[in-house]
Length: 77
Image (cartoon, rainbow, N blue to C red; front, side):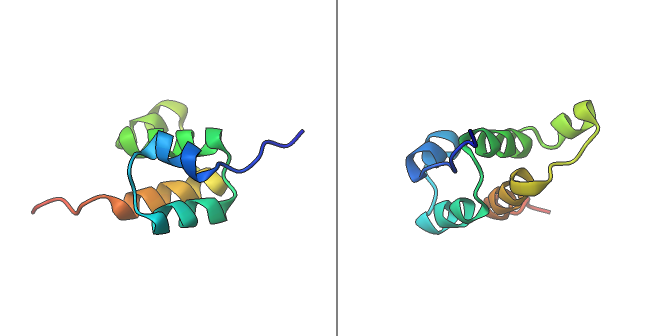
């Protein structure tokens, strides 16, 4: 059985309080709850996870990573 895409409540439970537009963008990827969690861990890990597993996120996970990274504040230079 194919897992269902994550619901708005599941997404918010993982990523926290984000704008409805972000929720909609994530839902459009069709990512499952597990994929949203993996993407969130990628963004929270500052790419350390990539160094450990020697691969970059792709598919729905990669799409969600890009959405979440776009929400991060720009670092002060």
